[in-house]
Length: 164
Image (cartoon, rainbow, N blue to C red; front, top):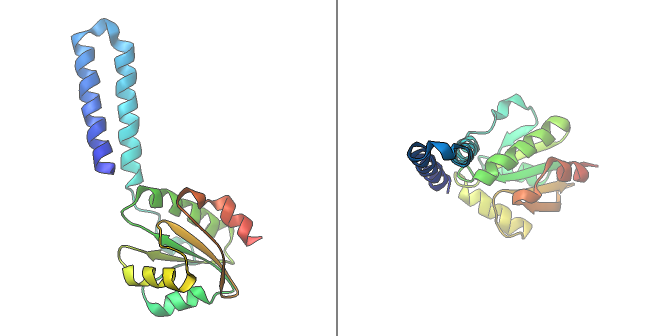
């Protein structure tokens, strides 16, 4: 969808630019149209940026194997976050997870990239009995899932409420 929005914003700039050239006295609505298209293009391109380097936060662990997944599911207090490297919503939500991690260094944060580790992602859905979605977050306390959410329901504030 990001590619479609990028194309739409470029076409919009061309459209409003052409109208502005054809009728310079009606410049204000066309200038606002161009600005709107540029904002759309900027938002589209920033959602595609990779999340911060995970090594900068000590409590972040990437799930690459079954052992690390089992460790996450058996944690005393942890967040297991299922992240899609192809989803703009995931790009936003992972920032919320990072902010939570920075505010709660005593909590382990496990990140599972669902596209790259599909079998492990399916194992989470099976073991926790929660239909797969991404992005998706699970709060684990004493080896049990006590809360889960997906998409825009995953915020630093909601994770913080679970940490209390």
